[in-house]
Length: 312
Image (cartoon, rainbow, N blue to C red; front, side, top):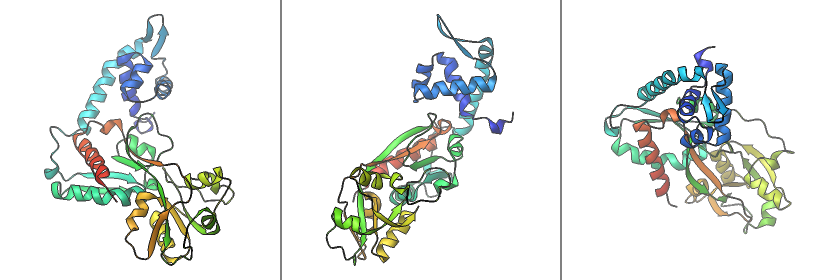
């Protein structure tokens, strides 16, 4: 077996499991669910061909192989943390570090400008590499090759740390010349629409009209009301959706913060959605391997500060 084929996070899980000798306590220490930790133990048992922890009347008892492995695993984990964590305090003004952030264009367009505004005066040599969801994989984030992923996630591996950035509502973006003078549910359903996908990891699949009503928050909300809208264009990019709304009579229904980026554009108008759509949640996630990194902690704090101070 090659090292490249092994999820290095399993070493971290093994270290915690052998310390705690209890799946529930290990899961709590790692800020993950008990089923996720149980699954990690199952993978470790298959990888090492040993039960590692056996349930006895005294609780979970380590096997002889687990006892032999414990000090070696701890040394490896501590070495990885030392390698990945800069020594001493992080000094933004002296750093020329490149932080790699995977962000949907919704997250990038709303968050990146205020983040850069805060970074530039205090850390002029730090660079941000903004990557799209199709540029990276879950493994890239798990292994610390990508510092952060910022997006809306339906499900996450239990090994990730996560932090909520904000909740967001929706708004409709329309051309200022759109003949609809008053947008209500009837006129909304009569109009043509541009659909923007939610984005996750990897390359998406092509859209089919018969399945589109299952694909996102807007259409799920309409379906609950017994309606569906007329979608003329499918896109994965919010800026494309906004441009189409500007140059055609199509309506783009977008997260509110994305829509408010164009509130001062005289060619557009931003109006309230004429039905209720549940809020979406934007999160940032990162690997346990980077959790204690001083520079990484500084960046995470700066992002949360920027998100909290954005106002429209």
